[in-house]
Image (cartoon, rainbow over all chains, first blue to last red):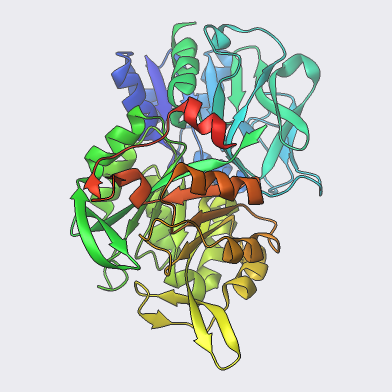
Length: 199
Length: 255
């Protein structure tokens, strides 16, 4: 059962709709009791760093989520700001991140323009991983963000080039973070979400 | 590399889709959900839906319709029409919309856009400028209009664009009223004037009648969004309604 965390941010319904079409059991989770049933978790997000952390704290699900991800090693996939809050900190906000992937969210340097990084871009895989199975190497994904995730090389699964190379897929043990929006990236995005569910 | 975006624009009136010429002479072109489904199949880069009645009728956005569209959309979804407050904007984003296009609110009370950007980030805040080329005593000049091109604002789109970033705006959509529905090409001069002064993404709409028009926009401006209404809903010189969108191989030739 894929648990899609509904803390008031991101395309919960887009994920649910996609998994429905794929015939993969899923559940929209808005309370700790429901979260327990999930064998895999998706943490979506559209918004700023502090806003996302605050909403997650207020949702009442944070402790249970930490317990499942850190204690029980349940696989989790963070998307966009859902990925960024998995870092230790962010230059976009003052809050502390979840710290699930060692790294920080940074402001793009001055020469990276125009911002936000908006549109379809390719990715370069750095380390093979089950979530990339069957992916066309030229596949494009939809990005929409103004800050980027920085982590050490071993955690970086894929990078993207937009005036500079930055991490677009990161992994630390059972924790995955994806900067682009797989739920809005047509066939290529669907294949990543399917791989996450089946791996 | 980041690719320029090719974006169908759908205009909603009375729950149906319409297409206008210079913001008038609307023609009914079908049902919004059906159109979104077709653009899903064609793997469109993004979709923009504008409710052209909401502001004029002084009513709330149609949340039910937005929710249905967001649920159906497997591509990024930008909604515009009647969004006046931060609360409305947050509610719409919660329904699964990626970006909100503010029209009259951007021009009349840009502080609302700033507040929204503070909370959800500038990546989800777009301003759509409806621009007319007006004759004046000293020649011609561009001016922003609201309320479906009926209300003057006295604001120059270039001046507004220069301030857009400090208002928290993450994208400017330039809509040429003069070129709307004419299918004779974009107003390249207007677009260039704005884009050369901006550090945020720009999307052009109004005038595209062929893929060549999009290609000449990319040739001149590089990284830019090319949006179109008529081009993606009509076929042939009699403007028969037929929803269409270039295949990936056709798109490659335009870049």
